[in-house]
Amino acid sequence: MNCLSPSILAADFKTLGEQLRLIDEAGAQYVHIDVMDGMFVPSISFGIPVIRTIRDCTKRIFDVHLMVEEPYRYIGDFAEGGADHITVHAEACTHLDRTIDAIKARGLSAGVALNPATPLSELDWILEKTDLVLIMTVNPGFGGQGLIPYTVEKIRALRQRIDAAGYHTDIEVDGGITHENAADILKAGANIIVSGSSVFHGDITENVRRFLDILNARP
Ligand code: DX5
Ligand code: ZN
Image (tube, helix red, strand yellow):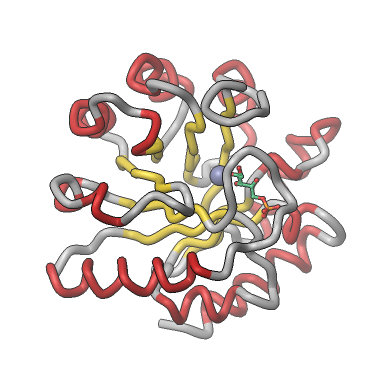
């Protein structure tokens, strides 16, 4: 299924609860939560207390993207805080296999994210047990950047690989996705679109509706 995962990094934090209600009512299936530690990426965003607080605002799927060094240390905390999906960066895990197992042991979906320059071969031995692959279409750390064009070819190659193996792994894309380029990204093989700026800047309800129209136009 094709889904929209609005990134609250671009939300107005003064009215975060209200903005969550708007994306939920407009039909966005997920809430994308970008956790940044100031080490793996330059920025610091927010952490477990914020997630725990907003858990009451919506029943939508909490899609937690950990841009954190050695996220294994925090899997239990994020699970208890209300995460449904936890995605970790392959580049940030000394023991990626163990980290995936820890997420799945909590009954959550396990995602593996790859930075733009990280090859798909990082997935060689763990793709089978991974529920979701997050292809970063920008270098992580900031919202509002432009999509790096070569990442579209990477999505295409991953889709071919997943289909050839007969897996049902989701392909999520994150960074610089707009109403203008979303159709091409879906055509390349992604099925979960993350968007911050193009959802939260302007009319949120209308922005979600436009993305859902694009997502629903493809099976
Ligand atoms: C980047 C984050 C993204 C970002 C997306 O480090 O992982 O989720 O907030 O924002 P836009 O859609 O503005 O590129
Ligand atoms: Zn993200």
